[in-house]
Length: 127
Image: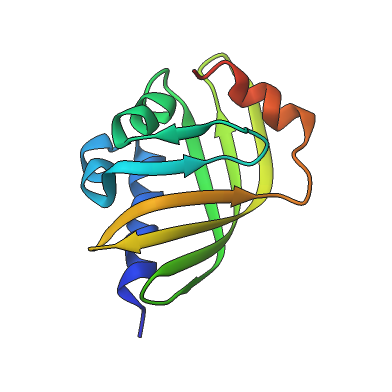
């Protein structure tokens, strides 16, 4: 049996890959706090997260290795592959942790053993 919070995160990955911003909006708290590996700035709010990833035609593939969930948190072991319309792409392993309250993602952290230079450069101009 799959924990409902694991299903919530799976739905978010699927919506992200499809750039289905309406579905994502329903899964992420309006005041979500979004922490990225290697980025000291916290992205605050669902609108800011959507602007970060929903514009510019970013193409994403999320390969899920495993998802572990309880009533408060979800830990995902994934490989993310991102492509921009200009052909620039990057692929990296990442551990993501999300906090869930009221059936919505309220905070997200991403962790890598080291943030490769190409990952930082890839995301630097997304805004």
